[in-house]
Length: 239
Image 1 (cartoon, helix red, strand yellow):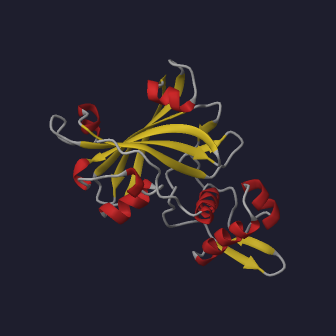
Image 2 (cartoon, rainbow, N blue to C red):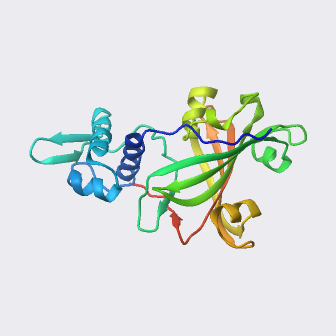
Image 3 (cartoon, rainbow, N blue to C red):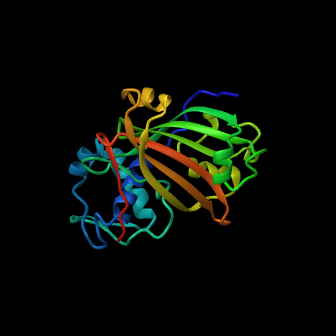
């Protein structure tokens, strides 16, 4: 069964807050350091100052930022909780970029190779396949396919999925992704990926294969993400 449509969108101020959360966690701004002035930061993020202020207010209420009258906004502490995009590791070539996603299709499939990655009975397992477009700001940068156990839902519809699948897992399925393992290689893009990203058939793209473990230490997700290295890059930072 194929369902086409768009995912439920995160409000823009939440997307901006998540981006700033990731940047602080990556060490771009250290505790005690002042953020750029609001007008400059809003311009760099291509959002209205009002939207930025809502994002900053949310991060302040979470205890990450501190507003000092007449001085500016400062990083109060490094994040210790889980951000929605904690495990999202693509950024624009110049750095940053607000992540968002559109769901293309949700299909029930039997794929023995993927079932093995999910540590399921590869001969009988039914899987939900979720194909999505990934953007940074407004630029389409990647195509991805995610597989989860069909038993989580007997009817999965694109319109019901959250833009953040990890949020959907928490809210609808009762688990969350606690850790991931990424493997990166370069492969020929499948036809649907080449068409989606607007590259010639047979083009070699970077591929990220990911296994995701839940808070119960169960493999719950397997995914493949293909991206064009001329548009974005994979990053991992620790601080």
